[in-house]
Image (cartoon, rainbow, N blue to C red; front, side, top):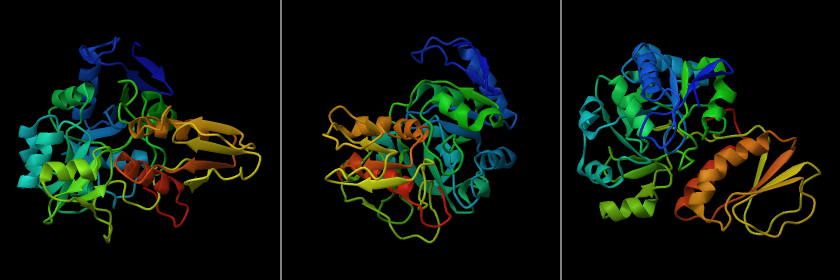
Length: 343
C-alpha cells in the first residue's frame, strides 16, 4: 500500500527485497530512520511481534516509549541490533555461553541478557547493570536499524499490559497518533515474544520462554537450561504476573472442555475438538494442534475475541513441553487478575 494516514498514525509499506510490493519502498525506511535519529518513535515489524522503537542511546526518546505505552519505569526494555559487531556498543562482556547462543540463534527470536555499557541509559535497563539484547530475523527491522545507525530499544507496540500486536493495523488501533510512524511489514511470522536467557550469573537461565525452547538451548550449550523463578524485581520484559491481557476475563482449562459459563462465553482451543453446546463463539488456533501455528495465531485470536460482546473467554492450555511452555506462560499471564501489576 502507499503511505497513508490511518487514525493519524503515518503507516508506510516495506522496502525492496522484503517480499512485499512497497508503495514508497526504501524511501519509507529512510523517513522512519530520520524520525528515529531526531528522537522520534517508530513502530516496526519483527518476526515475533511489532516493536515500538526509539534510539537506545537517547534518554528522551526512550522516555517517550515509556510514556506512549504507559509502561512503569521498573520494567526494562530489549535493545535490538542489526550486526554482531555492534554488540560492543551495548554489552561489556560476552561470555562463551552467549557466543554459542548467538552463533546458533541470531538473527532470531532469542534475547540474551548481558552486562551493559555506559552508553545504554539506565532508563532502558530500569537501573539494572544488565541489558537484554537481540538481533531480529526480519529484513525490514534489520534494514531500519542499519539505516538509523543506532541500536533500537523496542518493547511491543501496544499499551502496557494489553495483547501484543502482530500486524501494523493492531498498532494503529491501539496507539494511533501517539506514534510518529508505523512501518507495515505484514503479519509477524512467530507471533509471540522472544525467549530471554540470562548468561550473567553462572549457569544460563531462561527468564521468559519463547519458541526457542529450553531443549534447543540445552542442546547448543551442552548443559541443562532451566527457568529462573525467583527474583525480587523484573530482570527482563514479560516477567510481571499480569501481561498480554485482553479486556474480557479469561478462564484457563486443560483436559475436558468445561460447560459454557453463561450465554456469552467464548472458547479458544489449541486444535479441533468436539465442543459442548452453549458457547457463543469458538475459535481454533491450529488445524492440527501444531504449537508453532498456535503461537503464530494466539495474540491475533485474543484480539479478535476481545472485540466480541463476551462476558468470559474460556481458553485451553497447551501441552507443557517445548513451545507449549511459552504459549502457557502468555495465557497464564493474560488470565491473571490478581494484584494491580500488569506487564
